[in-house]
Length: 384
Image 1 (cartoon, rainbow, N blue to C red):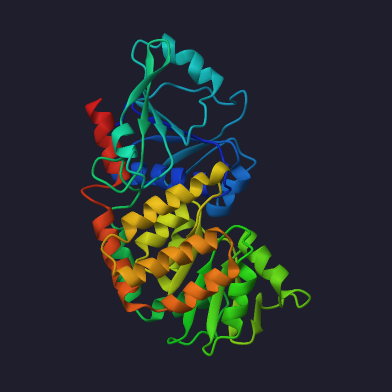
Image 2: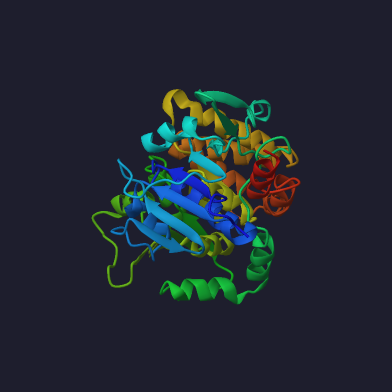
Protein backbone atom coordinates (compact mmCIF):
# COMPACT_ATOMS: atom_id res chain seq x y z
CA UNK A 1 0.00 0.00 0.00
CA UNK A 2 1.38 3.38 -0.99
CA UNK A 3 2.05 5.94 1.72
CA UNK A 4 1.65 9.65 1.20
CA UNK A 5 5.36 10.02 0.55
CA UNK A 6 5.89 7.01 -1.68
CA UNK A 7 4.73 8.64 -4.89
CA UNK A 8 6.97 9.43 -7.87
CA UNK A 9 7.11 12.77 -9.70
CA UNK A 10 7.99 12.97 -13.40
CA UNK A 11 8.68 16.38 -14.96
CA UNK A 12 8.55 16.83 -18.72
CA UNK A 13 8.97 19.82 -21.00
CA UNK A 14 7.64 19.30 -24.50
CA UNK A 15 10.30 19.91 -27.13
CA UNK A 16 9.43 17.54 -29.97
CA UNK A 17 5.62 17.78 -29.80
CA UNK A 18 5.02 14.05 -29.28
CA UNK A 19 8.44 12.50 -28.61
CA UNK A 20 9.22 13.74 -25.10
CA UNK A 21 5.71 13.54 -23.79
CA UNK A 22 5.18 10.28 -25.65
CA UNK A 23 8.01 8.59 -23.76
CA UNK A 24 7.13 10.01 -20.35
CA UNK A 25 3.42 9.25 -20.74
CA UNK A 26 4.12 5.62 -21.61
CA UNK A 27 6.51 5.33 -18.66
CA UNK A 28 4.05 6.97 -16.25
CA UNK A 29 1.23 4.66 -17.34
CA UNK A 30 3.35 1.54 -17.07
CA UNK A 31 4.65 2.44 -13.60
CA UNK A 32 1.11 3.05 -12.39
CA UNK A 33 -0.44 0.04 -14.11
CA UNK A 34 2.17 -2.66 -13.58
CA UNK A 35 3.77 -1.56 -10.31
CA UNK A 36 0.89 0.18 -8.54
CA UNK A 37 2.90 3.35 -8.02
CA UNK A 38 1.29 6.73 -7.48
CA UNK A 39 2.66 8.84 -10.34
CA UNK A 40 2.47 12.62 -10.63
CA UNK A 41 3.28 13.72 -14.17
CA UNK A 42 4.09 17.43 -14.56
CA UNK A 43 3.89 18.68 -18.17
CA UNK A 44 4.40 22.22 -19.46
CA UNK A 45 2.44 21.85 -22.73
CA UNK A 46 -0.92 20.19 -22.27
CA UNK A 47 -2.08 21.16 -25.77
CA UNK A 48 0.56 18.95 -27.38
CA UNK A 49 -0.08 16.25 -24.78
CA UNK A 50 -3.76 16.22 -25.71
CA UNK A 51 -2.91 14.99 -29.21
CA UNK A 52 -1.89 11.62 -27.79
CA UNK A 53 -4.33 11.68 -24.88
CA UNK A 54 -7.56 13.01 -26.42
CA UNK A 55 -9.42 12.87 -23.09
CA UNK A 56 -7.06 15.46 -21.61
CA UNK A 57 -8.52 18.90 -20.99
CA UNK A 58 -5.69 21.37 -21.64
CA UNK A 59 -7.53 24.04 -19.60
CA UNK A 60 -7.34 22.09 -16.35
CA UNK A 61 -4.31 22.33 -14.12
CA UNK A 62 -4.87 18.94 -12.49
CA UNK A 63 -6.59 15.77 -13.74
CA UNK A 64 -6.10 12.00 -13.64
CA UNK A 65 -6.13 9.28 -16.30
CA UNK A 66 -5.17 5.59 -16.10
CA UNK A 67 -4.00 6.01 -12.53
CA UNK A 68 -1.64 8.91 -13.33
CA UNK A 69 -2.10 12.36 -11.79
CA UNK A 70 -1.38 14.96 -14.47
CA UNK A 71 -0.41 18.50 -13.47
CA UNK A 72 0.08 21.50 -15.71
CA UNK A 73 3.67 22.56 -15.01
CA UNK A 74 3.59 26.34 -14.77
CA UNK A 75 6.03 28.87 -13.38
CA UNK A 76 5.45 29.27 -10.51
CA UNK A 77 3.72 25.96 -9.78
CA UNK A 78 -0.03 26.27 -9.28
CA UNK A 79 -0.07 23.14 -7.14
CA UNK A 80 2.43 22.69 -4.31
CA UNK A 81 5.01 19.96 -4.80
CA UNK A 82 5.16 17.31 -2.09
CA UNK A 83 8.36 15.25 -1.76
CA UNK A 84 7.93 11.61 -2.74
CA UNK A 85 10.23 8.62 -3.23
CA UNK A 86 11.55 9.52 -6.68
CA UNK A 87 11.68 12.65 -8.80
CA UNK A 88 12.49 12.31 -12.51
CA UNK A 89 13.47 15.17 -14.79
CA UNK A 90 12.90 13.84 -18.28
CA UNK A 91 15.46 14.60 -20.96
CA UNK A 92 17.50 17.12 -18.97
CA UNK A 93 14.63 19.49 -18.22
CA UNK A 94 15.39 21.48 -15.08
CA UNK A 95 13.29 20.87 -12.01
CA UNK A 96 11.09 23.81 -10.93
CA UNK A 97 12.74 26.30 -8.59
CA UNK A 98 10.30 25.36 -5.83
CA UNK A 99 11.56 21.77 -5.99
CA UNK A 100 15.23 22.71 -6.19
CA UNK A 101 14.85 24.99 -3.16
CA UNK A 102 13.25 22.24 -1.06
CA UNK A 103 15.51 19.33 -1.93
CA UNK A 104 18.59 20.40 0.12
CA UNK A 105 16.39 21.10 3.13
CA UNK A 106 14.83 17.65 3.28
CA UNK A 107 16.20 15.12 5.81
CA UNK A 108 15.67 12.36 3.26
CA UNK A 109 15.32 13.79 -0.25
CA UNK A 110 13.79 11.66 -3.02
CA UNK A 111 16.02 9.86 -5.49
CA UNK A 112 16.68 12.43 -8.20
CA UNK A 113 16.95 10.90 -11.66
CA UNK A 114 17.75 12.55 -14.95
CA UNK A 115 16.16 10.36 -17.62
CA UNK A 116 18.26 10.78 -20.75
CA UNK A 117 17.40 10.20 -24.41
CA UNK A 118 17.61 6.70 -25.81
CA UNK A 119 20.87 5.87 -27.52
CA UNK A 120 22.65 2.80 -28.90
CA UNK A 121 26.08 4.41 -28.48
CA UNK A 122 28.47 2.15 -26.48
CA UNK A 123 29.56 4.88 -24.04
CA UNK A 124 26.19 5.03 -22.29
CA UNK A 125 26.89 1.67 -20.59
CA UNK A 126 29.68 3.34 -18.62
CA UNK A 127 27.62 6.40 -17.72
CA UNK A 128 24.33 4.76 -16.83
CA UNK A 129 23.66 4.99 -13.11
CA UNK A 130 26.40 7.49 -12.34
CA UNK A 131 25.65 10.13 -9.72
CA UNK A 132 26.77 13.71 -9.62
CA UNK A 133 26.40 16.41 -6.91
CA UNK A 134 23.71 18.76 -8.18
CA UNK A 135 22.65 20.67 -5.06
CA UNK A 136 24.15 20.91 -1.59
CA UNK A 137 23.86 17.44 -0.13
CA UNK A 138 21.74 16.16 -3.01
CA UNK A 139 22.99 14.06 -5.92
CA UNK A 140 21.46 13.53 -9.34
CA UNK A 141 21.54 10.09 -10.94
CA UNK A 142 21.88 9.79 -14.71
CA UNK A 143 19.69 7.15 -16.29
CA UNK A 144 20.45 6.11 -19.86
CA UNK A 145 17.90 3.99 -21.76
CA UNK A 146 19.62 1.61 -24.13
CA UNK A 147 19.82 -1.75 -25.81
CA UNK A 148 22.24 -3.60 -23.52
CA UNK A 149 21.90 -5.31 -20.17
CA UNK A 150 24.18 -2.66 -18.61
CA UNK A 151 22.00 0.24 -19.80
CA UNK A 152 18.66 1.48 -18.49
CA UNK A 153 16.70 -0.68 -20.92
CA UNK A 154 13.76 0.13 -23.18
CA UNK A 155 10.17 1.09 -22.43
CA UNK A 156 7.97 -1.90 -23.19
CA UNK A 157 4.79 -3.00 -21.46
CA UNK A 158 4.90 -6.58 -20.19
CA UNK A 159 2.05 -7.85 -22.38
CA UNK A 160 2.83 -5.78 -25.48
CA UNK A 161 4.33 -8.54 -27.61
CA UNK A 162 1.45 -10.87 -26.79
CA UNK A 163 -1.05 -8.18 -27.83
CA UNK A 164 0.84 -7.55 -31.06
CA UNK A 165 0.99 -11.24 -31.95
CA UNK A 166 -2.73 -11.62 -31.40
CA UNK A 167 -3.38 -8.59 -33.61
CA UNK A 168 -1.08 -9.61 -36.45
CA UNK A 169 -2.30 -13.20 -36.55
CA UNK A 170 -5.83 -12.03 -37.30
CA UNK A 171 -6.15 -11.07 -41.00
CA UNK A 172 -9.17 -8.90 -40.20
CA UNK A 173 -7.22 -6.63 -37.84
CA UNK A 174 -5.76 -4.36 -40.49
CA UNK A 175 -8.98 -4.10 -42.47
CA UNK A 176 -10.96 -3.29 -39.35
CA UNK A 177 -8.47 -0.62 -38.34
CA UNK A 178 -8.58 0.98 -41.78
CA UNK A 179 -12.36 0.89 -41.79
CA UNK A 180 -12.34 2.73 -38.46
CA UNK A 181 -10.51 5.51 -40.31
CA UNK A 182 -13.09 5.45 -43.10
CA UNK A 183 -10.75 3.61 -45.50
CA UNK A 184 -12.42 0.75 -47.33
CA UNK A 185 -10.42 0.28 -50.54
CA UNK A 186 -7.42 -1.66 -49.20
CA UNK A 187 -7.34 -5.27 -50.36
CA UNK A 188 -5.67 -7.85 -48.08
CA UNK A 189 -2.76 -8.37 -50.51
CA UNK A 190 -2.00 -4.69 -51.17
CA UNK A 191 1.01 -2.93 -49.65
CA UNK A 192 0.50 -0.41 -46.85
CA UNK A 193 3.04 2.09 -45.51
CA UNK A 194 2.69 4.53 -42.63
CA UNK A 195 4.45 7.89 -42.83
CA UNK A 196 5.11 9.99 -39.70
CA UNK A 197 8.18 12.15 -40.25
CA UNK A 198 9.55 15.69 -40.11
CA UNK A 199 9.85 17.87 -43.20
CA UNK A 200 12.08 16.00 -45.64
CA UNK A 201 13.31 17.05 -49.07
CA UNK A 202 13.58 13.39 -50.11
CA UNK A 203 9.83 12.86 -49.90
CA UNK A 204 8.86 14.21 -53.36
CA UNK A 205 11.16 11.72 -55.11
CA UNK A 206 9.88 8.84 -52.98
CA UNK A 207 6.25 9.79 -53.53
CA UNK A 208 6.86 9.95 -57.28
CA UNK A 209 8.49 6.51 -57.17
CA UNK A 210 5.45 5.04 -55.43
CA UNK A 211 3.12 6.87 -57.83
CA UNK A 212 4.78 5.25 -60.83
CA UNK A 213 5.27 1.81 -59.26
CA UNK A 214 3.64 -1.17 -61.04
CA UNK A 215 1.75 -2.21 -57.90
CA UNK A 216 -0.82 -0.29 -55.91
CA UNK A 217 0.50 1.15 -52.66
CA UNK A 218 -1.45 2.71 -49.82
CA UNK A 219 0.21 5.46 -47.79
CA UNK A 220 -1.32 6.18 -44.38
CA UNK A 221 -0.30 9.61 -43.13
CA UNK A 222 -1.22 10.86 -39.65
CA UNK A 223 -1.69 14.60 -39.26
CA UNK A 224 1.51 16.55 -38.78
CA UNK A 225 4.59 17.73 -40.65
CA UNK A 226 4.76 14.65 -42.86
CA UNK A 227 1.21 15.18 -44.05
CA UNK A 228 1.93 18.85 -44.74
CA UNK A 229 4.85 17.82 -46.95
CA UNK A 230 2.69 15.31 -48.82
CA UNK A 231 0.04 17.94 -49.45
CA UNK A 232 2.65 20.36 -50.79
CA UNK A 233 3.77 17.69 -53.25
CA UNK A 234 0.18 17.20 -54.37
CA UNK A 235 -0.44 20.86 -55.12
CA UNK A 236 -2.24 22.20 -57.07
CA UNK A 237 -4.43 19.12 -56.62
CA UNK A 238 -5.37 19.21 -52.92
CA UNK A 239 -6.75 16.40 -50.82
CA UNK A 240 -10.35 15.41 -51.32
CA UNK A 241 -11.64 16.89 -48.08
CA UNK A 242 -14.79 14.78 -48.22
CA UNK A 243 -12.84 11.52 -47.96
CA UNK A 244 -9.41 12.72 -46.70
CA UNK A 245 -7.62 10.75 -49.40
CA UNK A 246 -6.09 11.13 -52.83
CA UNK A 247 -5.25 8.77 -55.70
CA UNK A 248 -2.45 9.54 -58.09
CA UNK A 249 -1.14 6.77 -60.30
CA UNK A 250 -0.77 3.65 -58.15
CA UNK A 251 -0.30 5.70 -54.99
CA UNK A 252 -3.32 5.94 -52.71
CA UNK A 253 -2.79 8.51 -49.97
CA UNK A 254 -4.97 8.46 -46.87
CA UNK A 255 -4.94 11.15 -44.20
CA UNK A 256 -5.39 9.83 -40.68
CA UNK A 257 -6.62 11.74 -37.64
CA UNK A 258 -4.39 11.92 -34.57
CA UNK A 259 -4.88 8.94 -32.31
CA UNK A 260 -3.81 7.83 -28.88
CA UNK A 261 -0.69 5.75 -28.35
CA UNK A 262 -2.51 2.44 -28.38
CA UNK A 263 -4.13 3.36 -31.70
CA UNK A 264 -0.75 4.31 -33.14
CA UNK A 265 0.70 0.98 -32.00
CA UNK A 266 -2.04 -0.86 -33.87
CA UNK A 267 -1.33 1.24 -36.96
CA UNK A 268 2.35 0.25 -36.88
CA UNK A 269 1.42 -3.41 -36.35
CA UNK A 270 -0.80 -3.25 -39.45
CA UNK A 271 1.61 -1.81 -42.03
CA UNK A 272 4.21 -3.53 -44.20
CA UNK A 273 6.70 -0.69 -43.62
CA UNK A 274 6.69 2.20 -41.15
CA UNK A 275 8.46 5.52 -41.51
CA UNK A 276 8.70 7.02 -38.04
CA UNK A 277 10.33 9.95 -36.32
CA UNK A 278 11.71 10.98 -32.92
CA UNK A 279 12.18 8.54 -30.03
CA UNK A 280 8.82 7.17 -28.94
CA UNK A 281 7.61 6.25 -32.44
CA UNK A 282 11.05 4.88 -33.26
CA UNK A 283 10.89 2.39 -30.42
CA UNK A 284 7.28 1.44 -31.13
CA UNK A 285 8.23 0.72 -34.75
CA UNK A 286 10.76 -1.80 -33.46
CA UNK A 287 8.16 -3.42 -31.20
CA UNK A 288 5.84 -3.65 -34.24
CA UNK A 289 8.18 -6.30 -35.70
CA UNK A 290 7.99 -4.71 -39.14
CA UNK A 291 10.68 -3.04 -41.33
CA UNK A 292 11.00 0.69 -40.75
CA UNK A 293 12.86 3.89 -41.57
CA UNK A 294 13.84 6.12 -38.65
CA UNK A 295 13.77 9.88 -39.27
CA UNK A 296 15.78 10.89 -36.24
CA UNK A 297 15.28 14.30 -34.58
CA UNK A 298 17.90 16.65 -36.12
CA UNK A 299 20.60 17.91 -33.77
CA UNK A 300 23.43 20.44 -34.05
CA UNK A 301 26.66 19.37 -35.77
CA UNK A 302 24.89 16.26 -37.11
CA UNK A 303 25.04 14.57 -33.70
CA UNK A 304 21.85 12.76 -34.65
CA UNK A 305 23.68 10.94 -37.46
CA UNK A 306 26.13 9.52 -34.91
CA UNK A 307 23.21 8.15 -32.92
CA UNK A 308 21.62 6.82 -36.10
CA UNK A 309 24.83 5.05 -37.10
CA UNK A 310 25.23 3.53 -33.64
CA UNK A 311 21.71 2.13 -33.73
CA UNK A 312 22.03 0.78 -37.26
CA UNK A 313 25.23 -1.04 -36.40
CA UNK A 314 23.59 -2.67 -33.42
CA UNK A 315 20.34 -3.44 -35.27
CA UNK A 316 22.13 -5.00 -38.25
CA UNK A 317 24.55 -7.14 -36.26
CA UNK A 318 22.86 -10.40 -37.25
CA UNK A 319 21.37 -9.28 -40.56
CA UNK A 320 22.63 -10.55 -43.93
CA UNK A 321 25.33 -8.07 -45.12
CA UNK A 322 23.69 -7.14 -48.43
CA UNK A 323 20.31 -6.48 -46.80
CA UNK A 324 21.95 -4.69 -43.88
CA UNK A 325 23.87 -2.39 -46.22
CA UNK A 326 20.77 -1.50 -48.27
CA UNK A 327 18.71 -0.81 -45.15
CA UNK A 328 21.41 1.33 -43.56
CA UNK A 329 21.95 3.31 -46.76
CA UNK A 330 18.20 3.81 -47.08
CA UNK A 331 17.96 5.22 -43.56
CA UNK A 332 21.03 7.40 -44.01
CA UNK A 333 19.79 8.79 -47.31
CA UNK A 334 16.37 9.57 -45.82
CA UNK A 335 17.97 11.46 -42.95
CA UNK A 336 20.29 13.31 -45.31
CA UNK A 337 17.23 14.15 -47.44
CA UNK A 338 18.80 12.72 -50.56
CA UNK A 339 15.83 11.84 -52.77
CA UNK A 340 17.66 9.95 -55.58
CA UNK A 341 19.60 7.86 -53.05
CA UNK A 342 16.44 7.06 -51.10
CA UNK A 343 14.75 5.83 -54.27
CA UNK A 344 17.82 3.80 -55.28
CA UNK A 345 18.02 1.92 -51.97
CA UNK A 346 14.26 1.58 -51.70
CA UNK A 347 14.24 -0.26 -55.02
CA UNK A 348 17.31 -2.27 -54.09
CA UNK A 349 15.79 -3.41 -50.82
CA UNK A 350 12.27 -4.01 -52.04
CA UNK A 351 9.20 -3.26 -50.00
CA UNK A 352 8.75 -6.77 -48.70
CA UNK A 353 12.17 -8.23 -48.03
CA UNK A 354 11.93 -11.64 -46.39
CA UNK A 355 15.27 -11.43 -44.58
CA UNK A 356 14.53 -7.95 -43.23
CA UNK A 357 11.04 -8.96 -42.14
CA UNK A 358 12.33 -12.02 -40.32
CA UNK A 359 14.97 -9.89 -38.65
CA UNK A 360 12.34 -7.35 -37.59
CA UNK A 361 10.41 -10.17 -35.88
CA UNK A 362 13.41 -11.43 -33.93
CA UNK A 363 14.86 -8.03 -32.98
CA UNK A 364 12.34 -7.11 -30.24
CA UNK A 365 13.08 -10.38 -28.43
CA UNK A 366 16.82 -9.74 -28.54
CA UNK A 367 16.61 -6.02 -27.76
CA UNK A 368 14.59 -6.25 -24.58
CA UNK A 369 17.39 -8.23 -22.89
CA UNK A 370 16.55 -9.30 -19.35
CA UNK A 371 14.09 -6.55 -18.43
CA UNK A 372 12.33 -3.43 -19.65
CA UNK A 373 13.08 0.13 -18.56
CA UNK A 374 10.30 0.45 -15.98
CA UNK A 375 11.35 -2.80 -14.33
CA UNK A 376 14.98 -1.68 -14.07
CA UNK A 377 13.93 1.75 -12.82
CA UNK A 378 11.78 0.29 -10.05
CA UNK A 379 14.59 -2.04 -8.97
CA UNK A 380 17.02 0.87 -8.88
CA UNK A 381 14.68 2.92 -6.71
CA UNK A 382 14.07 -0.06 -4.41
CA UNK A 383 17.79 -0.67 -3.96
CA UNK A 384 18.45 3.00 -3.33
